[in-house]
Image 1 (spheres, rainbow, N blue to C red):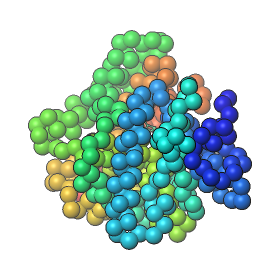
Image 2: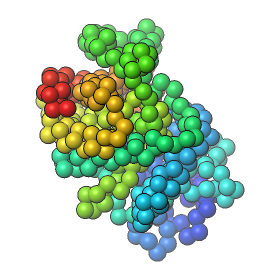
Image 3: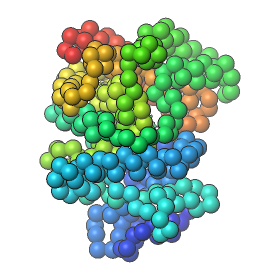
Image 4: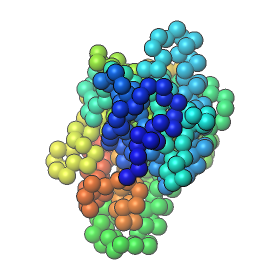
Length: 356
Ligand code: GN1
Ligand code: MG
């Protein structure tokens, strides 16, 4: 175990650091809170960047810097107070870099957003606010002129994710193919329908815009009154279909259970959350959303549980090399839970269309 305190002191932190403790539940990076003398609340967040997944850390940190600087400028122009609670602020290392490499691992530090809370589940009221906020996040970035690197190429490309699953099945490295045959077949039955977005893109009908691409409920900070402060976890901000932000939020928010709930009877797709979020999102994006994007939001709501099932299943078949797991069957349990959610959303497709 590395000396986290020593790592934190590599950054431009003027206060005396008293402790570094685990924070959050991301599946990719390791996150810690940094406590300093005289404060009961954490002052900073220290993160170990998962370099196996984010191989180009220079590009990663550069993207995040562009995005946060752009949003900060907009908020200042709007006369917003308390800027550091509304957009993440990263702390440079003592030699002026936006990450620290300790010879083995990559690290970064940002300011802890004070008086903020995260949730694993939301009410319809909060969903409406979240929908508006993600829509406005996309709107704020719609005039970012500097190009962003595609940090994980084909991240939300479902054709690519299906190919990864098929490759995993062909290799069957740890002999799990037979056990999961049912899910592979069910996924394949919908492959044609679920790759619609990529086809529309190739036909020139569907644009890519700068999206967040990881809009899980717990990537949003709220204040104690229920207002959204800011969106966190900016690693995957990149050009994508708007379906990414819309669909991935509903994947976590409209699910009546956890993403890895083993009891499938607890899982459903909550239409009240769907309606509230959709209303907010349509308001937040009213200045730029095209009819083709709006008409396919119900597709997006199905696509993300589908894609997540494909990704969890591929990782399970590959022997659990991508997502952190807490027990041996974890990725299989996650696959089943996401598949159930997909089926619930699929059953409500007509109702979703009607509402939109
Ligand atoms: C990962 O690290 P976290 O939990 O914010 C993943 C997302 C998945 C999510 C599933 C870079 O996000 O794409 O939707 O797990 N991030 C990456 O919970 O793969
Ligand atoms: Mg996260």
